Length: 94
Image 1: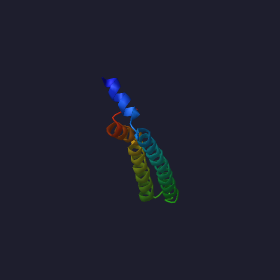
Image 2: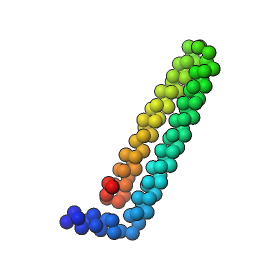
Image 3: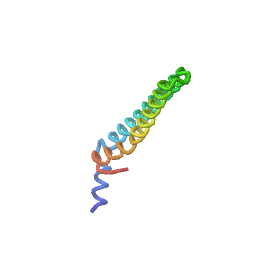
Image 4: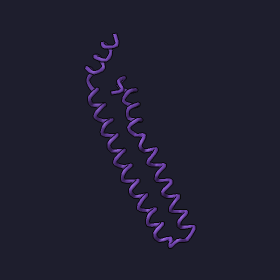
């Protein structure tokens, strides 16, 4: 019985289009994430470099790096989010 449901799900028109859209969205999110993390790391490095050892500048640079790492951790969940969306929309996790 489950084989019939899966066969019907893969035979429905639009199934491939949904997968293609979700895959493109995942790649776009990961590309934007990579660019954003790169900008945050450059900003934090410049802030650290131009602090000249001042305690406030160094702490601000560390904070920027910490926030960049948190953003990278949250953003790296994009494949999981897309997989869950694909499962909810199409009924198939693959």
